[in-house]
Length: 457
Image (cartoon, rainbow, N blue to C red; front, side, top):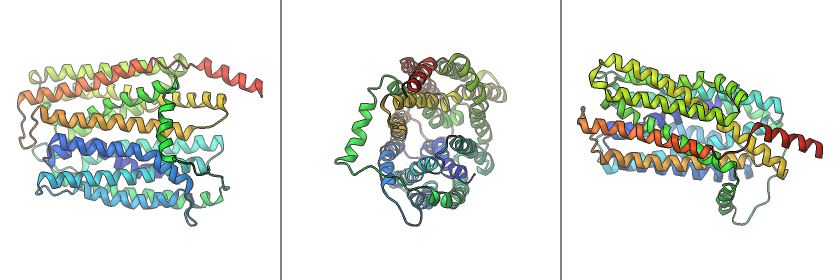
């Protein structure tokens, strides 16, 4: 339980940033889309770049008081909480240049502390629960708190953002109030996790670390490109990265679309985001069942197809939004977003499960476990793709002449926001489906290899 709670604090802060930072930077602070996209993209790239580096450091450094992981996590917990407050408190009276610098510095420091918590945290779970059944139980608690962390930002939006002509998402004080709550939650959850696992950490037997290697940091990223030569892993890592670009478009530009094109209130937008994540949560048993019946890749293709259908329906309602009442339009979009969430749910489970199959196969072939290495590379690829997409999104907002100073955007800008969201989401999902189809590993392949391995032994 203590370990699982640790996933709640930093997860809620990270999800809040993902949901709101692009809209906050452009519509609330008035920074140009290109500059906000540049700041968010650079910080996301740094986040991916720092993951394998911090993992390398965490494996080799041990504190007498906190052991190999907890010291990093303790410092990162308070670092995230402090800079989370600073991030959402940027004065609107500053010049655009100073607001951009403040935003960039806060995002970079936040992502650094995030990495120094998250990477040792994942390794800590392996350290304290080496037993197969214990590990399954541990991951179960971790997943529960991860899901709670996904939903909380939308609930905080509903509770803490004040109403201003129905558009509370445009008022900075709401974001500041949310930052107070998420920072306090981060500290409480982090301290519980660290103190609750400290005794278990000290009870674990000492393990050997790899010898210091020449050009170690260079080899970390050199091996990433070697990994892409694996015919089953490369479709997974690339397909996963491209598929989640759709989420970047939906969350980063979705707030703009729902605010300025659909004219939804902050309450309605929070309900839409809740529906998106609720659909992802409720769909988990279905995708697990379907993957057992027809295998994982076909189930994933069905999920991505449902996501495309949901986006298609939202685009249809977007085209006819001026011909129907606001409430009717909201209900129809809500249902479509729920369908999108149902399809998105498979992206949280099936690619990770397919990743585990690849690792299992490679472990049997090479008799070497590279789980952490592959996991870091998958995160790195996703963050690189995410950073590029966020930069493109920021530039596109400027190209369509989006002006945050205007409460009502020109119809051309409203329509362009829809094109960015629908085209960006649809293209990334379609390309991801083509990439995933190059994945050839099936259930029978794994079973045959495992049976052969037992016979050889």
